[in-house]
Image (tube, rainbow, N blue to C red):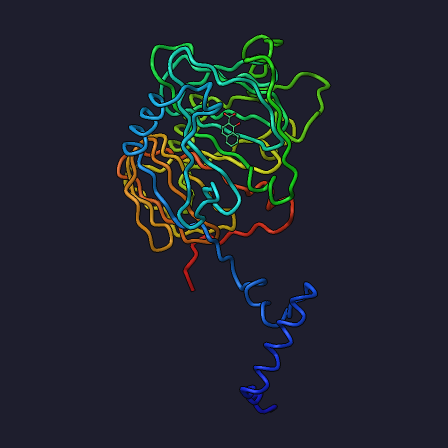
Length: 354
Ligand code: 1HN
């Protein structure tokens, strides 16, 4: 056996320190002092498990609505700012999330950016999003996508405020320093397609004959909650129920079966009343939104009591366990799509923290 290395003397440590200071002036650094922090044995997310109660967030959204117009704000969004990432405008280590409010009659004018966006519609009626001139009305629980570099504008033609959750891959786009954006002179991009035309073409396991993927994102802009909910209910009736997820559906690009957009994945799951999911973890930090029901989640050491429209975060590789008090439906999104493409996504079912 080789004897354990002799600890460095004070003189040797001082010599090393002087050497590090010297090479720092040449923009050099010793890997051996840093490798443990660079190549960790398991994920070390800065993001923390966090819970935003809708009942606490909603009054602040209404207050923002009274303080400035949607036109002044461009997008009147309250950022879900993870306290583990102070000042970074991030909900997880790789994603942005916020909650947006549009008052009756308001428009959020057209713009586009390289970041991909998704929305989960939470409250109100009469709102639409238009993507490249195709409008889709949004109802509670609908999951809507705005792929990279598509023009998009929103409007509220209803009588009450409308509120939805926005998820974007802004931190990923900025990691690669690939952010471009532009506004349009027009408030709205001229309507060039009949409303929800894509739903006629791309839902229900039917596709226009001869169509091929023309982009990396789904051609379907709105995944209706009513359809997802009906499938969940029937799958629940028919069984089986997954120990870690309850009954879970993944939102898919109908042309490829892959994720809806290249960087972000989304899913919706039903947890039966009284069911407790088995411990699970995965490397994609995940944002959950409670669409229906009440329950609790344990995320690492945190414990959250949730109700409808609440949002909570499970950081990368943190153990998660959910229990539904009443039958619950959770929507979730993450950067799993990007991780899978890079070959670095991992999961562990029925995991223990050891
Ligand atoms: C954005 O364009 C929207 O279009 C919402 O509604 C939130 C957050 C960061 C950057 C762009 C929208 C956004 C955003």
